[in-house]
Amino acid sequence: MRVSPLLVSVLFVPSLVRAQAAQLEQGAGEPRIVVSVSRSARVSADRAAVYAAIEATAETSPEAVQRATRKLQSVTDSLRAVGVPAQDIAAVPYGLAPAVGIAALQMATPPQAPYTARFVVRLPATRLERIIVVAAAAVAGGASSAVPGAFETAAADSVRRALYADALGQARRDAEALAAALGGRLGALIEATSTVGPNQGSQGSGFSFPSTFSGYSWQSQPPDVTITASASVRFRFVPR
Image (tube, rainbow, N blue to C red; front, top):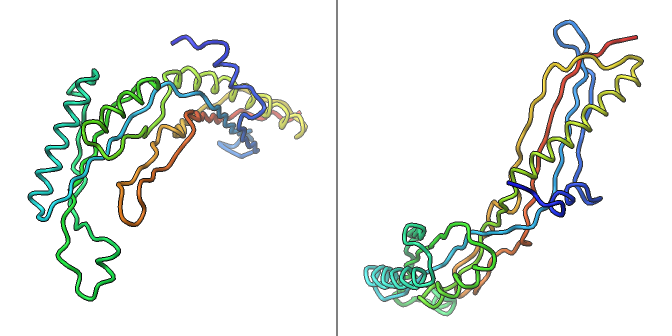
């Protein structure tokens, strides 16, 4: 995928996260210089998964499940009406529990509590401009809330490859400087390895169902993604 100059430029701004380490080690009877470098960049997200919370309360557990199931079908129909394919709507049963309020807990003999059944609907990565449309459809169908859960970017692989190039270039420069400081020079490359770190922002933010204790709440995150790439290289060290 082609990355625009504006996107690539984000890799080299002063706020770029940098971490590196260099050392001299003895391996296979010869001295070696090992350098590890990490590079990170924040990239604007262009899509996000959406999670919709569904719940229903009734006096008995079977009735609560039935009501929640009917709501789930209503939410599914509403999402399909705005163009979400049926195969992309993944519903997960989120449990059944007594709906106990603070007032009931303060009673010496709490009354029989009703039950609340819950589902979570996960929708696949959706373009950012579609999030409100999809969320509104889910809530209109009966969902308690619908929020973005995991921000993503289609440029992740292209940005990561650019980060690798930057990291490897810096690793060689550091290795050359260390070799010179030790009174020698850098020999042949022995090994190069890479590590892909988790993309922060694609791990997902959470949400909670409304309750007597907490009300509506969910974690929030900025709509961007932090991409990290690390490289480690080994060179022969040649004393002068």
